[in-house]
Image (cartoon, rainbow, N blue to C red):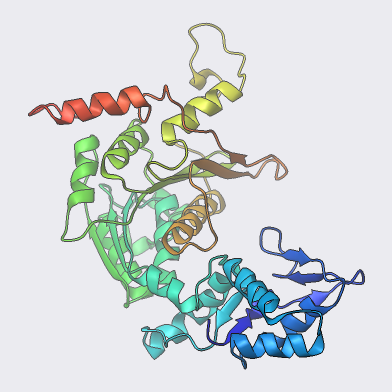
Length: 387
């Protein structure tokens, strides 16, 4: 860094015990540094963006003769690697003045969340602008996710849904109005999202996913690959299993989410990193003891209804959790290790909401035997169909 500065959101203070705290008091960001001789606090004060690293080292060494310039340079490097610094001499952003004004509030949050050695928070916004996202399912969950990503400045969002707008959708699906009843959701959503942010490329199509081949075709469409799949549809019942298989084959990161009564959840999956969707499902099934009798399925403990009870709150929570996870994967802020499911229980807010299970060697989707069998099928003409 040429002119390092402590990020404004990470500005430090000294405790009564003499330690230095950076990153505010937010768990997961804040750090506490022992400073018995006081030179770390002098360093923090010197990192105001007005000095080069050698000048910072000289200022601290002058105030604390027992500290060498090499010690200070190493400390600056450590603070940068931990994500507490930005460079006031970083190259100007490629975003237009209008984009800078539009995204100025979001960029400061990205800067706060970022724990990488990025020189400028605008780098993260530029990553978001360069990204391409495929979203399947424009109901409540998908609508809120799409709305948040377009407002945040994702580069290209392609939306897919087979249905038309129904009056009963309007209690929780934010992209539609009474005038849209009877219109294809794909068309109404596209128009609403384009009106929200004309700087984002929003495309849509009215299509139904009937099998893994449909998902594979959607991911393969267009001149450039998608960076991320957001699965916001819950029908057909096998659609998550299909997405898991197709994304494992293509190496595409994907996120699924939704609601079930008062439970809202999001799952984050990156092929080759952590357990896949099926690993998580099998691990959670083993963790829970539903006390089912032989032959009983999970529906006995959690019966299916003609429709899923939902309000704008549960749909919104699930969609916004998806949008947060998508932004994290696309920008790196905050750092997010895939292979987990997270949620909120509105009936009991203290209920633990994080489920993470490791990759399983015996997983029928990503286990060694399954991957070997699938590779062998791909090598046979006509043998690559996924069931």
